[in-house]
Length: 232
Image (tube, rainbow, N blue to C red):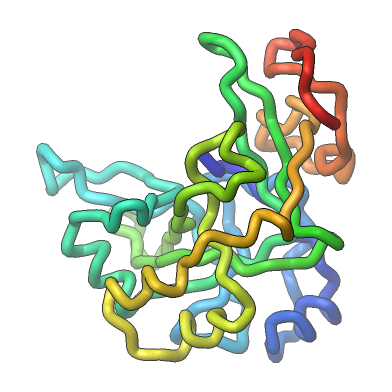
């Protein structure tokens, strides 16, 4: 599951890459975690950066009057909830990123963090949806959509964030699409354009926000146990 990512572009590079008209961008963050305010680009404001709460209220299946916070939503297969179908048609957003993190299970409790980036460290757009919070007045929440992993990271996780190809970003924000049509934009990202490597297990601490988290590290799980035969 992807519950960490980074976005560290400067204002000038953010404006140029995503075609925005903004006065400022949030401070660089090497370890965005659920519950934080994260930068997003919304259908309703496609040339601005909006801060959304990462974690969306989703009705419980057994008791729809109760909600749980969901930071990622799998689109493989398409979620069955009608409310999510509606969000895919009316409340799409883009979450800018320059890397994301996945955890590989290496023992019953142990897990090893990996950083996944595009080659040449290019920034990218993760597909997401947003909604007004059901539990906190005036708060806007969002979740990142996930899809099946490409071959380069299938040994780490079966799912990864849905990265929009550059040519599909405007369609995601501007075009009037059905829920089924949106899925056609979420193609598996080409494995040859991605790379992954182990990073520090300090990533698990949501308050850790250092560039060192993005650097290759000796593979250890969250308990400090060394993991053999992992490529750096």
